[in-house]
Length: 450
Image (cartoon, rainbow, N blue to C red; front, side, top):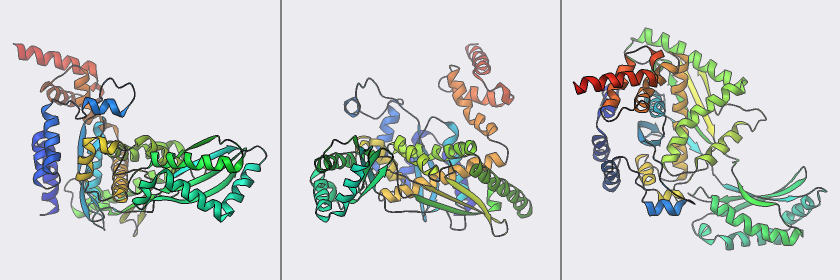
């Protein structure tokens, strides 16, 4: 199939009904029969959440209802040679549209998609003591120099959570450190394909009790640390002409692509010297990553905390991705480096049926594979945003996608939504507001009644 035909087919996917989209994914082998049935049953429930009331009541305290977000799919994101469909849960109209556009551009990269790799991840816990006179820091240092005590710590960790050792994980390293007024022991725990918060907390509390006996005082805290020593890296090398939408000829497309690529690189440089711009730059990256992580049942707050800590690790808040020109300005090179403390088993992932759909669509094999997908999502999401900023600007496209939400807020229902949205888009952009939408809706209903 030609590239043009392939992308026409992907655009046509958007025009299908929800039922047809589900059945298309099933026919392509992207969804198994049971996952497709789950989505069809959810559709038949008129948008009701697919979390049973009994499950929801067991997941959180004081549960009184269930909150639903639209779940959509990014088509054709190629990561490490595998074409993925990425499920996203988001209320923002532009997120999935932008990710689809970024994935389309990245598919034309020199590597035929995004390349990504993840290091060996561990989940960290820290045990902290108050230590005004540095005496505890000296004791912790002495403990870590004593082989018999290090062995005892390992045995305590194994006894606290034997099942993670049976899966090939467990405590890998313990390291003491002195802080101003405090002393701490950091535990690096291999939690395999689980995000591992509960595992780290369980092992941390068990080791804390052992340390308190040796140190002779109570610890201040033993708790998971939402930080990481390693990150996932994703890269793409994109010919500048691939940045230009439409069917411009080679010369015109090359000139426009060169201009866009130069401005994208300049925007990247701006984020490196201006923390305000870096914050918005990184928010755009997290738009896609958080939406995909939420759809898979992962802890999006932990993910964002680690990402922002990584962005500030130099002492200045920096962008998580960079875009530079290569090959005399003919190649736009993008690179993202971001810690992704996520899982593919355990926790809410096992409780939420939609998580199975998300991991299946993305063709995920393990946690590191999913990290690679999420990093690629962040990179292409960032690319799409920068393309818009470097070209026509962000607001025109954003407001076009927002028109349906404005129609809904005005009171439109059913087929009225698209009719009102379409009418809004035929107005000036300054008229894209609920007041204008209500006028259109009232006129629509009057004409319908007569």
